[in-house]
Length: 181
Image 1 (cartoon, rainbow, N blue to C red):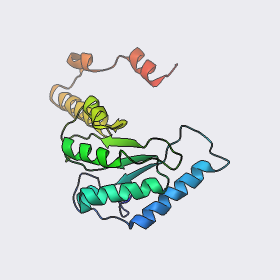
Image 2: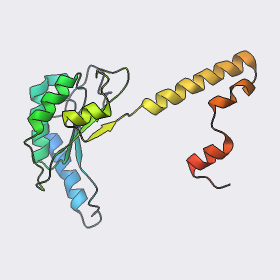
Image 3: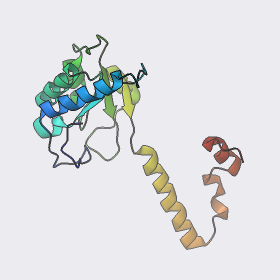
Image 4: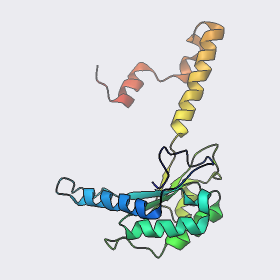
């Protein structure tokens, strides 16, 4: 990614970017590592993230993304885009790019709650030209809400007996964890 270290969440203000040339060198290093004799997994994809949209606007984000593709990135993750129109504009601008291995460029979107991005469904992202959508904190937020709720129950009621239906039974938990006692 092209943020200055230590990085900030892509949906927060106050980010700074490293020079695009430095990011291109990072991409080239990832491509070289992928191509090494120790790493021949054809499913491995070099993805380059850019936070340039919120720092310098759409033009800067597209320019950087194109440079990262030229450096060898096979997937681009434009972080912090705000609207369907932003995602559409970015995808259309990147549509003509092909990777250094002459394959289609993959686009990745981040769908996070309580961020800058409108709520967009996976189906809508597909229609906008995105190949991968991540929900990076969704399950953690849901789990933490459940933890907070059950801790309040314990504090107020002193038992969880009336709330067992909100929990995974032991056998189901073992199945999910692939644990064989």
